[in-house]
Amino acid sequence: MGLFDILIKAPSLGATGLGVITMGMPAIDRPHARPIAGGSLITFDVPATGTGKLHKIEIYVDTAMTGVKIGTFYPDPGNFPEYYHHLRDYISPGSLSVGFHSISCNMDVGAGDKLVIQATGGGVDVYEPYGPDATLGYNLHIGGDAFGASQPFAFGIRHNNATVSLYGEGN
Image 1 (spheres, helix red, strand yellow):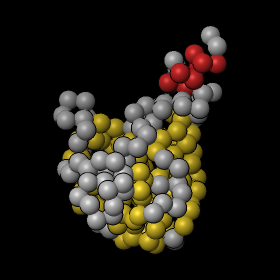
Image 2: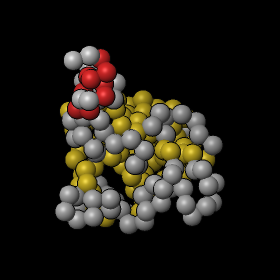
Image 3: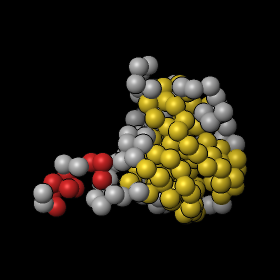
């Protein structure tokens, strides 16, 4: 088995090979902001590339955030998996100031999981190709507490094409 076979044919090893799990998109300064005060935002950018533990979450905050929770959610296999998700694990970093943050963690993750962020105030950096005021251009977003709700949680409004500055890495 060559390097190509390891990186391409063995997705359980992670996108970067050698057991590294990645999910989400790089946490960089992007041109738009997505306020998520009082709501939960699920990212579809890059689902988890493997199963194991996340050891680092990176986020780029546009507007100072309070009451922040970040977690891994997996789709409900029998109940509209693009909308209904179950909480696997989460962290509560609390308040985050504007700018880049790298947060150490030890969070469970499964292949195909998606990152979810929730806050009581503030917002995260995003790129919205249709512009920040367009009705298209967000990932799934819904008001309410996805972390405390009964499971599975229904992320009710589907909008596509946003890139969220939220990234996880582990092994």
